Amino acid sequence: MKLISIFLILFMHVSSANGEELQALDAYHIYNSDGERTDYASLFNTAEVADIVLFGELHNNPVTHWIRQTLVQDLAADTTRALAVGLEMFESDQQVILDEFLSGMIMERSFEQQVRLWGNYTTDYRPMVRFLKGKEIPVIATNIPRRYANAVYHNGMEALENAAEKIRDWFAPLPITVDLTLPGYAGILEAAQGHGGDNLPISQAVKDATMAHFTMQYMRENPESRFFHLHGSYHSNNYEGIYWYLRYYGAESEIMTVATVETDDLENFDPTEAPKADFLIVIPSSMIKTH
Image (cartoon, rainbow, N blue to C red):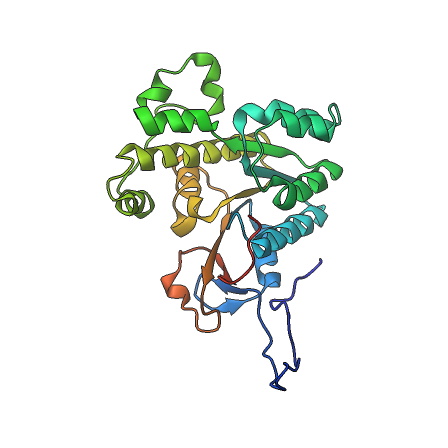
């Protein structure tokens, strides 16, 4: 197993221009669910025995991408169990194009021209997709097509209920239950301060439900596999979002969650004030952003 040290030493015992010794800088800390400092080895060992890993990242943070890339590579190296990867970054109606690229039917350039890529795909996600393709690891486009999430935002759940049958395979089965009392969804309404209306958390919930649905669908068809799902941390923080829907849909699997946050004071960070997860990755807010 390729381990990452819990500390990335950027500067160590380096003299500044005025002769003062600079301090070593930590790129991240990891905490377990008890709020205790831990390390990558513990994170990996837990992921290795989990059925589903819900990895919540910060989309523009290079440290998050580095840890995630390493974890996926280490899980792929465990040949005792097949691995599949689900990505929020691809929408369910793009699965056929994704499969064509992964199988070698179409070239990478054609694939990237045909799908709706995130702005930071080239730097942050292309390396992982190339790795998965090279290892012949299935990649699942789990997100609801954004046009349908937007339709829910503007017109409520009726937008999906009135959808044609031929497109209903692209999102979670109807009816989609939404519990607006869950703190995560209630917090969206509070943070919006009336902007966006009641449909704002519902449009978020249909994304969570759809990502959970496609995760469950793969696991039911491949019960011996391990499923790694990558998404924004807010989609599974506090065991809500995707995690909540997995349990709602009847998942009895061992599910591990990872949350990621930034802090202005890494050394004095209080994990009790952060989102709850099995593992919490804490990164300095001064870390450079990828976009």
